[in-house]
Image 1 (cartoon, helix red, strand yellow):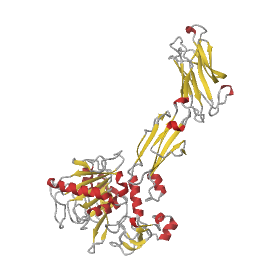
Image 2 (cartoon, one colour; image 1 turned 30 degrees about the vertical axis):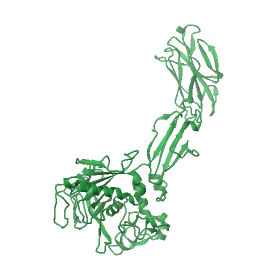
Image 3 (cartoon, rainbow, N blue to C red; image 1 turned 90 degrees about the horizontal axis):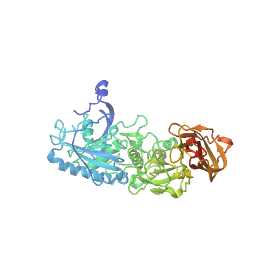
Image 4 (spheres, rainbow, N blue to C red; image 1 turned 90 degrees about the vertical axis):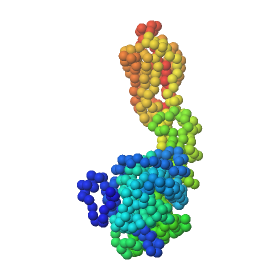
Amino acid sequence: MRLVMSAGVWVLLGIAQAQDLHREQVYWDTLDANGNLTGGRVDMLTPVKGSVTSVQPALVTTLTPFLVAPNPANRVDLVIVGDGYQSAQLGTYATQAAGIATNFFNKEPYLTYKPLFLVHRVDVVSVDSGVDNDPAQGIQRNTALDMGYWCNGIDRLLCVDVTKAYQFANNAPDVDLVLALANSSTYGGAGYPSNDLATSAAGNGAALEIVRHEFGHALGNLADEYDYGGPATYTGGEPGAPNSSKLTSSAMLAALAKWYRWLGINNAAFDGLVSTFEGSSYSQFGVYRPTNNSLMRSLDRPFNLPSAESIIIEIYKLVDPIDDSTPTGVTLNGSETLFVTPVAPTGNPLAIQWYLNGNPIVGATGTTLSLPSLSLGACAAIVSVTVVDNTTMVKDETKRAQFMTESRSWSILPSSAFTTLCPLSPNSAGPGASIQGLGSNSLAANSLQLLAINCPPQVNGIFFFGTTQTQTPLGNGVRCAGGSIFRFPITQTNLFGDATQTVNLQSLPGGAIIQPGDTRFFQFWFRDIPGGGSGTNLSNTLRVQFCP
């Protein structure tokens, strides 16, 4: 059963909620007796997008040449489903779907952004051939998607059961857009913006242009720019669509609203001069369109620049600018070479900039960055990369920053931050105690901790540090921390022979002060009576170079 209602007739609210439906304005378009594009909008009950998760099994094919994608999950997945095709007609359907899938991308902005799409065809088999009310009203057919003309009493409004369309589309690896093709040559189509779905008659000579126009609605959230089908003078509020406005050029510029950034730009490839041309949204007066005669007004025309911008932004709401990169979330040691793989619009390579601690690295604008070339020394650092699409088809810098820009970052803690030196001295518990540094060598972070392991259990000891390196016998071990010596309070090893010491770099023993760039040598002295000799021993030494 098709989810459509006659104008003004609605199911009870409780039923709508139970089926997870909502009221949607669906666009429809046709040609008048003079061949001019005309149409309008109707209210329908349709499923809330994403609420249809069930699948009607069917064969799915990812169409060439869209197979090559570094990260297939990071693409706009356009899924084509057909209705009114019997099993013997699937070859015809496949040819029609391939023609649309290939040629759809021959017009901007799709020409540039074709690599950001994957197109899938789902082979849907119907009992009957054709769709409802075609070629005449009253003809009913048993088809898989319940497509038909005369939807809501409008002859060329070609509707589809949105639930069934998504149930079949869900066979694809992912679904972002759905195109429902009817096995018909009768002109017709519809755009369902909130469901990202469009319909078209696959056998009509204008099918390709219908699909582009309907996805102007369904993907770009664009309004119709023709000026008939409604009241002569527009009396509504400011249209929500980005390509329709009540504002004149001067008012638009003063308010910094709608397509004000494009005013005065004249590009023949995008329908020429951008201004405010009176007549849009089905009315002749009181409402304006950006250019004289774009695809949202007439078929076989280009999109205007404000409309192309809206479509590109919507594409980037579904696709991240970065396809792949060195994995984030792990601490690197500074020996690695990082990489980033941006998406690749045709003829429009995305801009790349690498940063060190928030500052741009001069000349680092490629897809890789060698960390050793940064000469980080022992200091921790944050390396990041920002990728942005700087296409001239977008002028809204806020939207560019929000949707067309992506950054990733990595924490670098060079292995040279903590190094050990001095020989291990055997003790009564084993081959020798060793010292480790935990946390950071950053003075600002102030998170340094010392850990001594493999000491005798439950003995007293003292962590200490010196300003220079030496090698002097002491007790049963070797003292390698020299120069000025500073001692922490007495501590005790635990049952496992471990000892820890938190180092407050803001309040060091003996009033010691450590500055960025200073190096200090930490060691652990402990009593070891069973070890013989002097009854004391030392761990090896931890060398720490401190950073800001």
